[in-house]
Image (cartoon, rainbow, N blue to C red; front, side, top):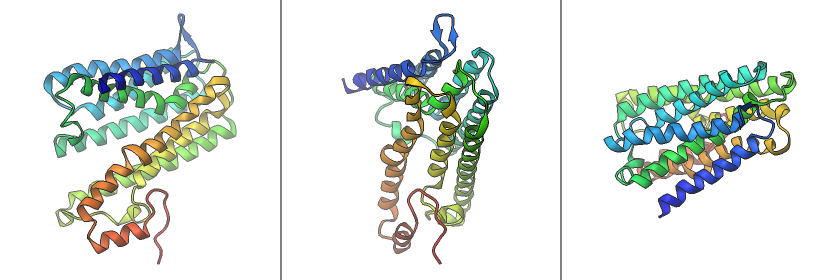
Length: 286
């Protein structure tokens, strides 16, 4: 029952986001293009659920999430009425981010094997479908500002908001990429087996990759401001959602719990957590 309610809740929230984002959207026939993007976000994940459940595997879950971003953005861009510079840049930024992250996550799950998050749910059809439905909602809400830009019927000059948003996005993306590469290199070194990373940008933050993720979607929201009006202002839920998801639900809390369970009694780990911010980058104190 809880799984079914979770699926229905995902659909209701998705419908509300689609309704708000469809205000001022281009149309495809009688359907707002923004709403079509929302439908696609869920449809891609439901279609992927079928073979995943049959094979009892979560191997392609994260990859499907990235492919959903790409599918929604590319189709919305192709169907939009005369995309402008802002729409082109927004689409390119999402494509770059989703392509990079999808490849990174797929390589990681291929190397590390199964994802423990799905051990207790992939054998239950509704519980497993709930996970795929939530991923569709995650894509839609995270993509809200970018999709608002791409589907906007009222185009605006790129201007100061566009430049500021692009700069913030680039900074966030760079931080995320550097953090991921440094951690991958750290884990690849056999000498670091069983150790936690405290070097590079990880000396500035315990979760710099998440900080970069939040920053880049904030940049996308800044870029979108000029085309937001009426109910479309609700699309600013995107960076707020990303922040809450990563700092209160699945990101930082989960990793902090695992780290404390593994290294909580280690004085070096205690010193690292006491002197290093959880999220926002800060140069190490000398």
